[in-house]
Length: 266
Image (cartoon, rainbow, N blue to C red; front, side):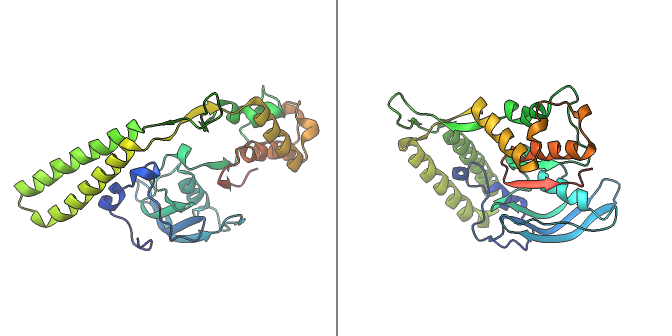
């Protein structure tokens, strides 16, 4: 696909269900790609103008500019906290404009520390991990991967096929016959996928909380990086401003996210 062209709604709807509903462009070489990004608020104030940026994996990039130039807005659009008015965003090759924030695998440090005053440093750093569930592969008693037919995906594809059939009938009724060949191709592709999924079981995953040992290891590793290991039992009120800043950074680091954003942490 041409990433320099704004995708229309029909392209977005043609999502490959085998990629878990993610539209993937394998031609991209950058880890994060922003193409012609614009942000216009409801009061017609434009905060970001045709912004383009390519960020490679492991890059550390700093956005510099005067107050109000759109730095924070751009970060919030990458994180999914602000909608994109126009333009295309890709994260790890996945079209991310319409991805929910929770599905972007992004950790962000905001301008405010936002630490819980009643929790220790370790509690603040581990709080998000304790409440987060991650897909965990399931195994049988012999240690072999559990497999099952993906009935949920089959139902989604059957629903999509039914909608296409209705759309095809509308086109016939309205005599918009030039769309019929394309619709038939899509219907055949969906049928092929359904037939394949019905006879090919896939690995079974279940959302589970991280083990306590894994959470503790992540907290200890981040604390060592930030040199706050000796403060893990302290409350935020017993820390300096710089130490609170490092705790906020640590809370994001333990996520092991694909993208790490920092919005001028105080």
